[in-house]
Length: 290
Image (cartoon, rainbow, N blue to C red; front, side, top):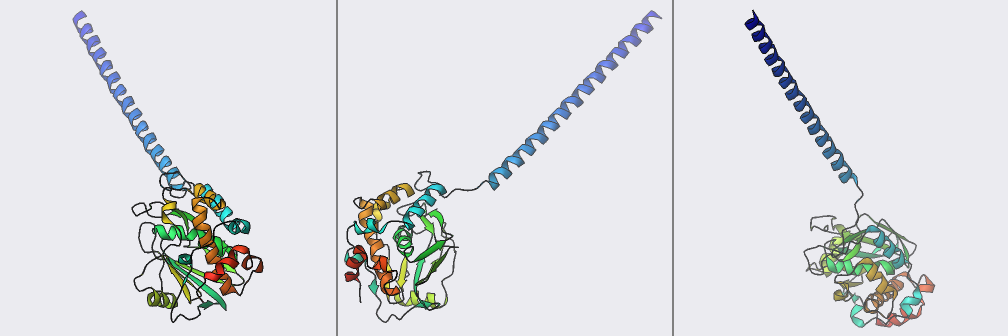
């Protein structure tokens, strides 16, 4: 009887140990499952936050340039005092738009039209937008300009600039149309068609960009600024140079801006007069191809 009782007790103890072990395994399995679910949820939440976080403009040359610095530079560029341009060197003849033999007046809504053809990846387009935006802003207003940089795998990589894609321009005296044919990754973006395609192909059969026609009778092909001066520069450094007529950038970009302004004054009939009768513009006008 004693042996039987001891055997029963031992069996019961073994059963209890087995039950405890089973429950411990279940507890560990539940904990592991909960941890796995928490990890998955956390990953999903973090992914959603990253995906929806506002993106800054591509960094220029690894400089960490932000959309804030681009916005500040744009505000200074469009409001650049005429006195700064008057204090800058005069343009050189190579910065003057060439006369298009056989070119005819290009208009839109009854106003002389400026047509820009370029691409977001193009470093020379990136550079030329600086004086072009500065000059056109004296005659009207841009909206929707977005900061970007030229391609990272081209010469003068990551040149800070703005894209004309999706932007608009309003003016009482001029019309402006831009066609950005490819994005920063060299993928098709906007289509050059109709009269725009016809004039581009007629006077620029090799397709070089940036190509800008002023009123259909004059045009520039390529950048009119010194490309080397933009290499490795940030938005802050470029606009600081433009604000300083004695800087290397100021000595290149500012005369280009004045030359464009003089050409625009010829199209607009000398309006606005305070711009078109300024010292710098009057001096540059003698270089215009009549």
